[in-house]
Length: 164
Image (cartoon, rainbow, N blue to C red; front, side, top):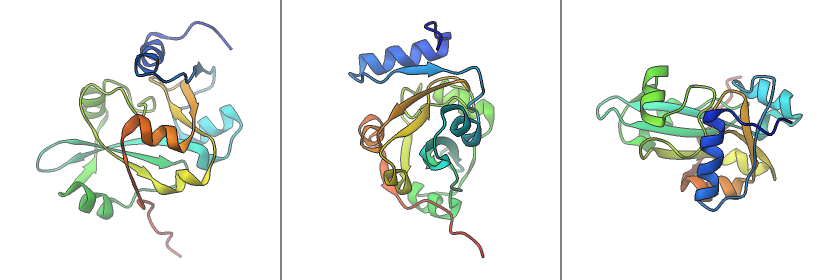
């Protein structure tokens, strides 16, 4: 693994250190932009990948972050109820403007502004998780407990029910 991190990944590594977390950011040659790419890159189960999904509230235009398990789809009606108003998926410009990161590299913490955060309860089925670390090639390993501590996110049942 290269010792040199890109600027965004290094900035996120410094943020972790400043907040008292010893987690190590790694950058991979393969993209980790999608959950499948990330799971393949680190050799873990798809469910261990933390997807950072940014939504926008329709009335107040606030960012809402859902940290979802790799294979899961977010139940947007439930998320609207949790957010207290209708939501929609945020576009790339909104994501960058409010988090400071590009889609595919949004970490669970360290955003430009305060972001309401919800954590998919199914992430707690795993001992080890992997989350984005500032770029579509950077990730870091953490536990579900770390994720909750780092984000102060609310643990919720947010997974869309499978339609059979």
